[in-house]
Length: 560
Ligand code: G16
Image (cartoon, rainbow, N blue to C red; front, side, top):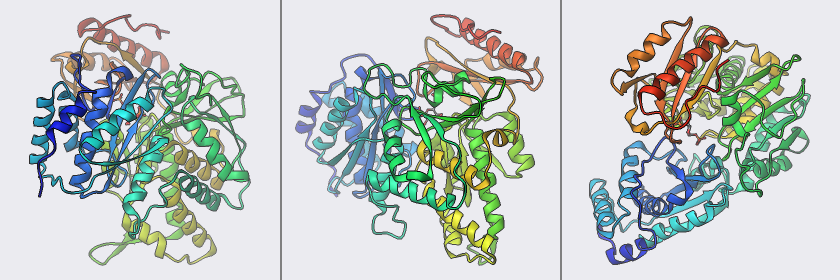
């Protein structure tokens, strides 16, 4: 067991990445995220931590994704990926924060490293392997170079995959670490990723008439070139038209486009001519989220968000499992039907939760915002469907469920076909993380199999009107969420004031929480009518802005 490292080498490497400002860093909802110009010391610290995490896992490969996803192009960010492709375990997020803030001096970083090594009993003689990829942000390349310095100064090996979507990075990490085992996930290459998705999609949709072309908004980000490549593998099985695919011009990434813009503004993106009868979707800047939409004949915009994707997927899988009469082998020797569950956050529309519980009769679990929370809750089911309303999510299949699909034999041709479709779904759906391209194909495969239109899908239930707004405040850390983000414990007194407002509205629901990816607090409101929803949202935004440190312009622009 070795627990010492070359301190002079560390001090020398840090000298090119020393934190010179008073900035305080925090590993947030999806890693570190802020203006790219501030990130150099953070990247160096993340390089060090990735090495420790890999050594902790006895040389398993750790992933690092450099992206700020839905944020504007000037921002960037970084998140760490565990050996099976999940987000960094939460007990290590504090270490990431500590190390990043200790980049101000060689003494501080040395003692922070020593403390983590001692606490986690890390044997530094273990090998360390790290893989990195980045989205299309211009700042990405230099930030990767800072990360490489951190990794190499502690003797880690690093492989740079260049430009990837976030889910592709998670995919290769899982592939590398499962290679040669019975859980082998595939070849760790971009091509193998496309091949895997395309082959599964073709299996499920074979023999069905193709749907009308899907308009895809690439948010002028990495999802656009990835979609073009995936399209080649899908060939005639899938018709689409890509818009917002300019990853060269500056300032276009996520600008009035992408899943976050469409979800929050509830309107089509810039650069898309959406006609009645057309079907469309938007990816986000790193292609881990997706939302779908269409317009009614009178021009009304209809959004099919993460809640609608979750219910579509859960319903489809339950239907297939029923047709196939799937029984899962339990540890006590019994065989019982699939245990399917759905995971949501406070942002889920109240109508979707009611539909899942009352109509689909599927249990719902609530977690705080952040796919890292939802992912773990979904692992408790044979089939765990988790989606945030913003379009971020996936479906997890337990090892027992996968085994049941592999070993079941259909009693009829229809049952056999359903089993084939279930097997293909385990290949199509990214098991590591929410993936816009995989989710897009999941939705399109489901709709093709069921020959279902967007309008029919949308009619499964009617969303309550909702509105989400951002309020800029002096210090968002003053806002402390509790009860899976549905209430605030601090600032003292604010929650009571919110409750008083909510009580005035029929079917009113409203909560405030600090964003973990942007320097704002989010206000979400829901009520029986559009007018009431907007009013409730406005009142609570005003409460926050006027009484709790609002800065800049008072948010009133959305008043009807
Ligand atoms: C990230 C997280 C999501 C979260 C979103 C917004 O998404 O992965 O789980 O919903 O941020 O988080 P917040 O409300 O804390 O800002 P992305 O697509 O930006 O990586």
